[in-house]
Image 1: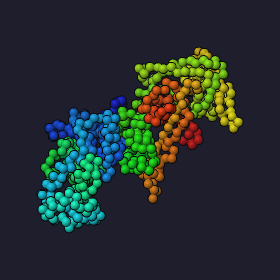
Image 2: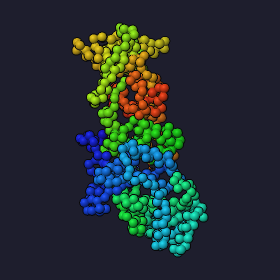
Image 3: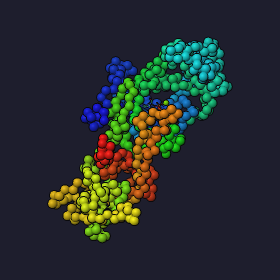
Amino acid sequence: MSEHLRDETSSEPQASGGPSNFIRDIIIEDIKSGKYEGRVQTRFPPEPNGYLHIGHAKAICLDFGLAAEFGGKCNLRFDDTNPSKEETEYVDAIMDDVRWLGFQWDGLYYASDYFQQLYDWAIQLITAGKAFVCDLSADEIREYRGTLTEPGRESPYRNRSVDENLDLFARMKTGEFPDGSRTLRAKIDMSSPNLNFRDPVMYRILHMDHHRTGDQWCIYPMYDYAHGQSDSIERVTHSMCTLEFDNNRPLYNWFIEQLGIFPSRQYEFDRLALTHTLLSKRKLLKLVEEGHVEGWDDPRMPTLSGMRRRGYTATAIRNFIGSVGVSKTNGITQLQQLEYFLRQHLNQIVPRVMCVQKPLRVVIENYPDGLVEEMDAINNPEDAAAGSRKIPFSKTLYIEEEDFREDPPKQFYRLAPGREVRLRYAYLITCKEVVKDSGGNIVELRCTYDPATRGGNTPDGRKVKSTLHWVSAEHALPAEVRLYDNLFLKEDPNEVEEGQDFTANLNPQSLQVLRDCKVEPSLRDAEPGTKLQFERLGYYCVDRDSGDRLVFNRTIGLRDTWAKIEKRATTGK
Ligand code: ATP
Ligand code: MG
């Protein structure tokens, strides 16, 4: 766990980024100096080419969180300038995810709303001699651009007349030329140390339907030509993006200055990266397309929809984002830090119930046949208002297979032959006999109970070292439980041998399905999305695949102390 987590005293870290946040400091300064008349306008600008992931949550919390903190506004703007990858499905999913995270946008916009304005501005730049139509191919443009150590060369088309440029650009728009045959480029400086200034492409030809504008356009603006102006149109004051756009900032400013439009300003912050996790829509799309996962909302995916299905709460995610803060250098955050905030929140809010994942039959020999007692069980020890419920107890029960050892190792305090343990909320039982099948497998335990220990109390004060969860066999509901582990084995999923890609690091055991689980009957009508703690096992939620029988996703385990002891014993660590 990182230092600042240990120091965490407030239970509600600020979603917009913890105590020190240099962007917040800039905003405070700008308000003080009267820049933008004290107004704060931000935007969250996803490209609708995939589902949002936990990295986007950081941007969302900053964009929306800082606006809210200063009484400002935040727009949701779809950066939809690339029709080849964008789809309406993604637009809808992104809106759902932003709302689910707990934010509501002020304006809802699309960069494609600005295509006409951007086109008009391009004509303005051509007329001012600041843009030209270039006939070089993409490869040639790259070759002419030069490198960090070598200046670029000017395109042979750079000195076309304004009239010729206006004519060619108009004809690009009407569809006269094939894809890739021409571009519109800004005329800046082929020897600039910033490669982005070496006559960057503003428009490309692409005869392709767009998810909103259909076939209205066959020229599309590039990111650098669209983004700053879109901010400017929306009078965005503080335009936040990740560090890799650092080198694009001068160009962002250049277009705004040349056009003399509203002076939006860009600020860069560090990208969220998590161990064992990939945060790139392109790579997540590959996992979906190649069937490594079930879909964008597979509970193993770091997408907001996957995490939601897995049982994450928006609060846990916002608290985590608050804890990682904002800085100017990229780092990597341990997945355990996210899990810490998840457990912390679920512990406060979810009811406890009992589920036996790998059932072992227990018959209480001295318990009356046919008797069913209703045991009082507390729903949430962290929340008195959550109340209590009744759970049925009877002669035949299930306990967890792992809670019994015929030949118990040292420090294993659970059930064993001749040993007494407590059944949660019920009685103390003692194991009298182990029944095996012809193959030597344990099929049943014969036990006795002490009627004087109802509720788990021992009137004579005798101690038992272990309390087990259980369900009544005849009352339990059948259930399927899906256990998830990290999708990637390596901390850095991108670390691969030559010739491999990140899929080589997929964890073949990231999903384990237990089909023969038993849950207590109070869960009969649990709706998909319901979050629970299965006592002693972890946090779970009801999956939407539930039908005749319940399906649960394990959101996250409790810390399993026995697994640790056993590991220490076998590995010496
Ligand atoms: P990806 O590579 O996953 O597609 P992106 O940056 O291309 O990410 P966009 O849809 O363009 O995705 O991102 C919208 C906003 O979210 C941008 O401002 C971007 O900087 C921010 N963002 C994306 N990934 C992260 C991340 N890992 N951490 C913080 N912010 C992010
Ligand atoms: Mg992108």
